[in-house]
Length: 375
Image (cartoon, rainbow, N blue to C red; front, side, top):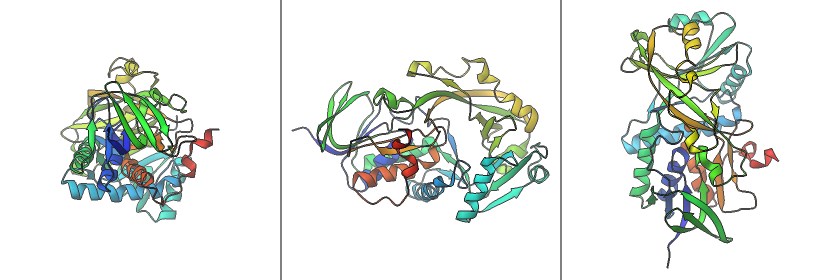
């Protein structure tokens, strides 16, 4: 008789690997499915690092989630003995009257987060490489920093395997079919599995399986630049950063390491429909040029492009997450629409999937992440 798993996870990158870890740790029989063995470069989790910030400019509905996520990241670092989190602080810079900064201030006040409000001259005094005029303001979050994304996924997958999870990273999931109210047939390109519940966490490619979801995949790039100023190094106290310009361009970056600094642009990119549309870095002229205006105007000490990479975003219409059950399905969860700011939440989103699979109470208000908001 074919084994029936308690929970099947389709897509085991950031959120999926976390879900598999927490569900198997809690004693569920877990099946983890992916087309390639994560961490890989076919989704949204590669590129070494991801920023984590707690005072959240995208809305204070995210703050309870990210605070729990931070607790889980700290636990993972302790339990896995892996390099998971670096507390470098995060410097957020934007036009001084922007909603982004207002939301950061509001969430910091509500949740009593450790932040410093800075003028452009104060920013320049602390980090002399920054250049901003008086149209801007900054908020430095002392407890933020960055996560080692690929280390995290390796740790979660190894942990799930240690707890007995079945891992099949060799085939594409073609369909989910509800055989009964509590039994799902999962057809891959190689075999068929059965599970009582499923969670779809397939990132940019979720519409291959669930084409009616309101998700737009977008190709994005990020770059590493050579630096000749040690003040840009993490060891010198340079922080992670986000910068929104007066022309509404949004950039992010990390402190330098080994004479290189990683920077990306959050907005922009190319809409894509299939995996082969996500061309490698350098296939569009803008790939190698999009950071130049930011560097020329605002950040000194960088000597030129070293290399870059391409990834993809799964954009929802409002760029807020989707965390829900599929319509009229009580045993198929979906987490998608992370819209380029989701990795920092992967731990808590995985925990939520595991708790929901066990019909446990969820201690967060997830109503603003419902699929119903698009009806």
